[in-house]
Amino acid sequence: MAELRGYSGQVLRLALRSEPQIQFRALVLDDHAKGLILDLSFGIAVVDAVQRFGLTAQDFASSDLVMELLFLQEAKSGAMAASFSLNSRLNGARLAAETEAMTDGLTGLHNRRALNAALDRLGQSDTEYAVLQMDLDRFKQVNDTMGHSVGDAVLKRVASIMRGLTRKDDLLVRLGGDEFVVICPGLTDQMRLNDLSLSIIRQVSEPMEVEGQTAMIGASIGIAVPLANVRVDPETLMDYADVALYAAKRSGRGQHMLWSSKMGHNLASLDMPESGVFAQG
Image (cartoon, rainbow, N blue to C red; front, side, top):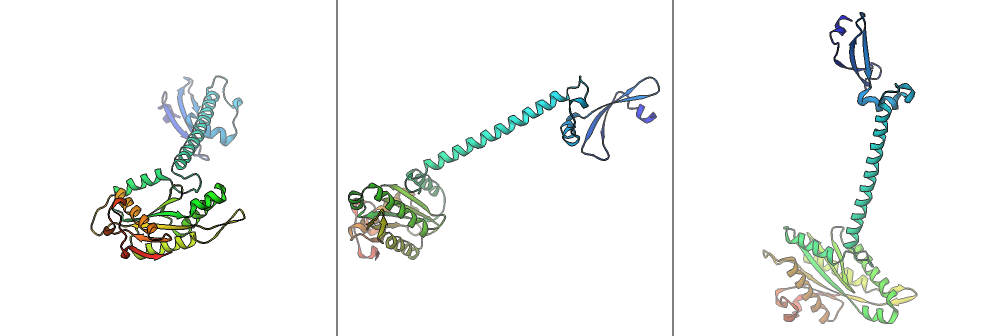
């Protein structure tokens, strides 16, 4: 008692031996009658104490502000939970909107906006990549004679074929209509690009049973890869792939061609050397 009396007027921090996580604040008061009074308060531990021991308003003095503090704590917790939930919904909505803005609504592939963003990133990096541009052959005839619903189903089937034949990191894009683009980061090997193009053309050219009708289409592909030791910006590489695509179409369709400098650098200067043809699909 003598030692404790020396703390008169001071605030001590105490804890239950059996529940050390439950702490108290204790004000030591001298009652001037050879005794001491310890005015105990849970302080910020009151929330844990109420939950641990099931305390109610009757366990506190009527003048104690604990219940008001608990109410404020609950209100704060509720507000934080509501805020977190709202933020989660807003973030989810934002991500969904961004994804939708980058996605072709019919096929689920990426769209032109996503392509432009990817080309911007590639233009600022040292990543090597290839560009494949593909047009469908005879698609307009299918669309005109069998109806747009069949045409839409054919486009979805083509998108599914592309997903099945490409890698997870490849960017698959529907530019619009029957035009598609594949960006292959880290892939510039001509034989592998040859095999990929052949596989796409062969599967796209197989008869498609849609709504009780048989749709027959084909595909032509132009491929462009950067020349050795030559830095080419993405837009230029896209132009090269476009040149190679139209060279393939003019060579009889159902083919794929690799761009070479002999073809020229734009459609106006298009040439079709035999060495540019890989194989007929």
